[in-house]
Length: 187
Image (tube, rainbow, N blue to C red; front, top):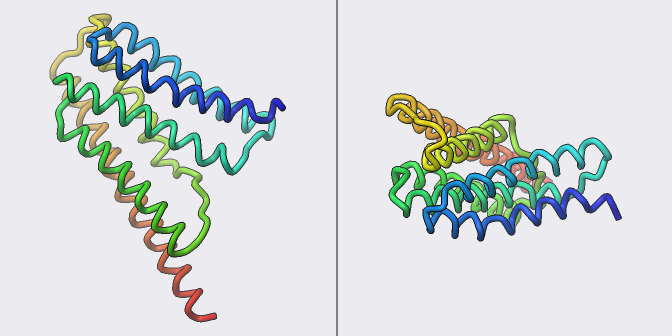
């Protein structure tokens, strides 16, 4: 029974999307910061539990990145709709996730089942995006003051990692798909 605990934690993280969006929309950035922090801790916790106790599963490997994408996409979209983030950054974050999910669906339909294990670059991108959201919520809560130059640098860093990770997925998974399809034709 305990082996399903990481998946339960992941599912609970997915449920945090609703209060996060509502709190951002309502301008209650302190509450949104609290919810986002809980989500960040739960992301680390479910991964640690799965690895530490060998409770890894295929469904957990699929649900964890979906939960991350839901939470981060929601945070970026609602912060942009509130006028707090540049729309181009949100479009980049959402576009990357659409490209990854579309590519995964295409790979599954054209090639076969795939391993959803994220690359190191993807993990770093998720961590940077999450840290960016937390820092933005800290700034909006007036807990910290962010000098404009530092904020511009964090936006640039987030954008650079998001773009690099999206391109990395397209290149790596595109090459894997071509190799698998060539092998399939030669047999």
